[in-house]
Structures are given as C-alpha cells and as structure tokens.
Length: 314
Image (cartoon, rainbow, N blue to C red):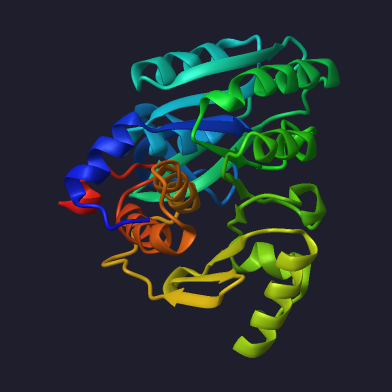
C-alpha cells in the first residue's frame, strides 16, 4: 500500500465502515465520598454524589471505532429491560448504528462500579446467557450486513453472544473482509480463519501455557497462529508494548503510555483502532504502531474511554 498523508488517512477513515459484533454491556458508575467505616462490617460507607452510565464491552469497542471517524454498526443481543433502553440511547447519542436482538429472558449485562476517593471499591455484575433462537436471528442479520462493511470486529467477552462466531468468520472471509477478534477463554479453535486475534498476556497463557523466554513465546505463538489459519496474532503486553506474530516473523513495538491511570477498556481501544486502520486498507504491520499509540493514550484516562483522531495524530 502506498504511503498515506494524514489528510488521506482522515478522508479514508471518514469513508470506512466497521462492523462490530459481540457482547455489549452497560457500565454504571456510582461516585461518592468515603468518610467512615460501616458499623455492620469492616467496609467503607460510600455517600453517593454522582451517577454515570457508559458503554461497555462490544458497545465500547464500537464507540472507540466511531471516535476515529468511520461509520460503525454494532450487532448485539440485549434484554427487554431498562438497561437495554439506556444502552440503545447512549449508542444513538454517539451516532453508532445498532442492530439489537432482544431476548425477554435475558438481563442486559450491567457492570456496576462503586468509586470512592478516586478508587474502585467494588464491582457488581448483572448477567445471564441469551436464548439460542435470538442468536440464530443474529447470524441472519450478520450475513445480510457483513458484505456492506470494510472490516469486521468480534468482541468476545464470554457472555454467550458469539455462539455462531465460526460461521460468521467464514462468511466475512468469503466476502473478502478483514476479521479481527478480541478472544476469550481457552478454545481459540472457534476463531480459526480470522485475520488477527488480539489476546493479552494472561489470555494467551491460558491457551499456550506460560512462557519463560521470548524464544519459547515466539515458537508457541507461531504454532498457534499456523494451526488456526490466522494471518496474525497480536499480543498486548502492557508495559512491554505489543508483539505481532505473522508469516513474516515477529514485530515488537514498545509501550507508549506516559502515565497509567486506568487500564479498563484499553484492549477495546487497541482492537477498535486496528480495525479502523485495516478498514482503510492498511496492513497489520502498518496499523499496529497506531493501535499501540491509541492504547498508550487511553490508559491515561479514567474508566472506559475513547481516543479521538486529533489525539492520535495531532
């Protein structure tokens, strides 16, 4: 691909379209003051002064892609409840298009975080598994929509919304689309044929075992990549930056975080940036340093957050 100027890239991003599929969540924050310990148990008493809702999971991934300029569609399954309506409203406010599968038996996934003295004191999760019939409808929606997009991103949080991901990957690749997966669990066989997967260190260690040397990591990562027919495996390594394993070998870029305030959602920012750049026609090796820079910016922000085009390239 020829070298692009920043103006070229901005125009390409504005024309690009990214399809995000996966487990959307609603992040609810309760902020308050901590002035005493409860007489009932040795826990702090938080006097709540502010409440805030943010997009989480696949919805945060979609928001991160949208922040860079592309048109974005999110396909996800939610319940028929108030959190689902709140989630849909937030997506609309951010100009993220959405195709929602509604399951009346499902509790829309909510992560409630209580914050006191600028620290997270507790997190409470509300969730259950979606119905199989709703997931089958989701596959039909995907088959119809995928050919209209320049890149397909799967955000797997292990909540059951990606039961049909092997077939979805097959459809997207048959349509000539780059496919990116943020994986979960120890069965990466379900992601076979994807363009790239983006595990962090602990996620990859669940699959290939812990490694003692870089040589051992390279050998195991390449074996995994080849056995699952992946173009690339991008390992995010926190303070050690990122490592890309592909057919050309191994490429590493150092971390760029100036100050780490909160790592929540950093992986969402990385894969959303990577997908946006691939949607513009970049290769994995061209997109990787940009995604690394985006991750370095977002960890300096509180909670799930985004990086704008101006922050990334300004």
